[in-house]
Each structure stands twice: as C-alpha cells, then as structure tokens.
Amino acid sequence: LTRGPGVPDLAGRHVVISAGGTREPLDPVRYLGNRSSGKQGYALARTAVARGARVTLIEANTGLPDPAGADIVRAGTAVQLREAVLEAAAGADVVVMAAAVADFRPAAYATGKIKKKDGQEPAPIELVRNPDILAEVAAGRVRPGQLVVGFAAETDDVLANGREKLRRKGCDLLVVNEVGERKTFGSEENEAVVLAADGGETAVPYGPKEALADTVWDLVAARFR
Ligand code: CTP
Ligand code: CA
Image (cartoon, rainbow, N blue to C red; front, side):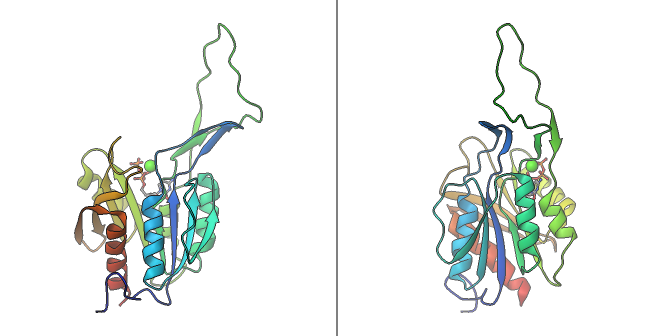
C-alpha cells in the first residue's frame, strides 16, 4: 500500500488548511457571518496528520476542539484570514481553502453599538468586497510545485459552476458540493465531486467528512509523486 488512509504518504509535506467561516463585524456586538461549521476543514487536518503531514490549521470561528498534532492559527475576519494564510503559504507544499470566506464586509465599523430610534427606518448597510484569498494564493505560488485546493459551495448548476470556478480561481483541485439549508452545513457527512485542473473528476459518495478528506489527500499525494 502506498496511498490511502493510514499510509504516511504526506510525510515531509507541510499542509496549510483554512477552516470555518469568517465574521465581518458591523459594531462591537454584531457581524455578518455564514453557516460554515468548520467540520470539513478539521477532518482534512486530522486525516493529514494521520498521513504524516506537518499541518497548520487556520481556523475562523469554529468553536471546535483543537485537533491533535496540528498547529492552530486563529483568524476572525476575511482580512485576518488572508494575512494568516499568505504567511503560512510561504512555506507550504499544499494550501487547502476549506474556509467560507465572506465575499463582502461592512464598509464601516461602528465603534459603538448601532442603536435604533423610534419612527426612524434602519440605515442600509454598505458593503465592500473582501480579497479573494484562494485566487491570490493560486496566482502567487511562491514555492515550485505547490498545490492549491479550493472548495465551492453551490446551490444551482453545481458542476457547471464548479468547472468555471476552478478555471477562474486557478487552483489545482476544487471540491464542489451542493449546499442548502439542510445539506452539508454542520453535518458530519458530505457528498462532493473533486474537479482537477487536468480535467479529472472524482465523485465522492455521501459519507463521513473524513472520507472526502482522504480522497482529497489521495489526489494531492498522487500529484506529488
Ligand atoms: N474564497 C477565498 N476568498 C474569498 C472568497 C472565497 O479564498 N474572498 C475561497 C473559498 O475558501 C473557497 C473558494 O474560494 O475555497 C470558493 O468559494 P466560493 O464562495 O464558492 O466562490 P466565490 O469565488 O466567492 O464565488 P461565489 O460568488 O459563488 O460566492
Ligand atoms: Ca463566495
């Protein structure tokens, strides 16, 4: 056996994984956030440790217990996550962006709690774009042979959107899953298709998030050989 769970086929490799979901503060008590639980990213971290990798897990707002054997970095917002990922990526063989990064953040942060006033309509919230961390890491590959893996959560035209996103982001692998209110988020299981820049497509049937994680590492390890 030279691949698969339990085989140290990532020994000597440094992998960087982002997990969770960013929160973009509006005022000291409120934020814009998303439903990502971080469980898929943590499953990637656990399985990479089991396969012998040195693992840096950059987590955003998961509240999950630290996985054994990984270095943990905390990042709350998209801007903080970008800083942490770019710093860790400089020494990484693989970067996996499993985190759900907010596409937009409030244009202004109110240092005091925003208050309502009787008879007054709420003010609209102005948003600005956050940096695209995955695209930046993929475009800026500092290390030769570095692999970049993205995730895509889609609700419609899942595969067509996934293929387009893989090209647009410039990553090597894109894990595409269909999401909805009762699908994927917070669950222990997942179902996905892993699209590769070389045209490969690997369907992963509904099952534990560890199984999807191990499929990602199989595809990564195969590209290192
Ligand atoms: N991502 C990122 N930085 C962002 C937004 C997304 O690094 N500002 C990464 C995510 O971590 C994920 C991948 O890009 O690995 C795809 O995220 P997704 O939200 O599906 O893609 P977007 O390009 O934001 O497109 P959409 O408009 O469909 O949300
Ligand atoms: Ca997005």
